[in-house]
Length: 174
Image (cartoon, rainbow, N blue to C red; front, side, top):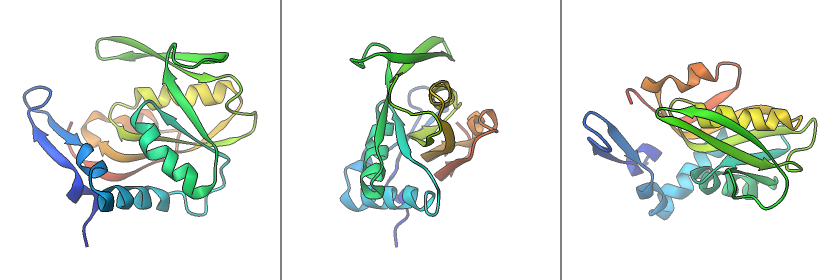
């Protein structure tokens, strides 16, 4: 029986020397791998009480929408600034070199709603933390942060210590 990590391609020294890049395209390109990834992520949501799944652009959309479909939950987009057409709330966060801003529609989360945030990867945790702040600005409660993969060496889980964080695969290092 294959595991999800069997479908992940590792590319050494990309994008720079010493980095082991974990490529999810090989998971997506294999129907069995993709189905297994979604099934394994969905196991973390069994028995959970939540109202909405939100995913960060763009790989959070890939994994979040099938989960929302399977569980008959609404799906909310968290996008880069300037990509959403209606009134938004925004959150700016620091990157290694500079900053980025993400947005959600102002009416995407209702006060009191319980939200699961989904992305493909937790590295430093900056993007998903900013997404959580957006949910909270709108009066929602983040009840779970769910990832396909975690890079333990970047300590994102520690940064997100006040949240319930789960990942299907955890890799040591960066």
